[in-house]
Length: 126
Ligand SMILES: Cc1cc2nc3c(=O)[nH]c(=O)nc-3n(C[C@H](O)[C@H](O)[C@H](O)COP(=O)(O)OP(=O)(O)OC[C@H]3O[C@@H](n4cnc5c(N)ncnc54)[C@H](O)[C@@H]3O)c2cc1C
Image (cartoon, rainbow, N blue to C red):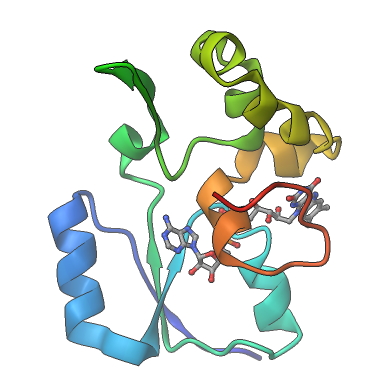
């Protein structure tokens, strides 16, 4: 049995406060599709998981002053299907088409891909 605490703050300030408080004992979790596997394999053993799930603003994709801003928890499928990505940065959407595992593509945010060297990763590093 792997024991850990779980926190789900409802603001970015609360997330950063939790990370400051917990230091190396904490690990961010977004979709959990990579981290949970690493935990099951005991390659990563955080004492506390700090979830990003309640930070809905982090899922947004927007165009600001000509720059495309993709929230850290926007899912693979959301990026692939987003009209702004298709219009302004179509090359970015293409690798996400490779995410054909439906559950992972709809649940898994892009930041998890970019911050973990998982063997299943198909996306380019920013
Ligand atoms: C069946 C299956 C199919 C998959 N198919 C693909 C695929 O086709 N292409 C692909 O690229 N990957 C694939 N993956 C791997 C995985 O789903 C992706 O890498 C996914 O994007 C991970 O995101 P996550 O939010 O689930 O990460 P999590 O598991 O929540 O976190 C992974 C790591 O990223 C860190 N992290 C998460 N969010 C942030 C953040 N906002 N800021 C800083 N650190 C953060 C966490 O602390 C953790 O270390 C697959 C996995 C499975 C199980």
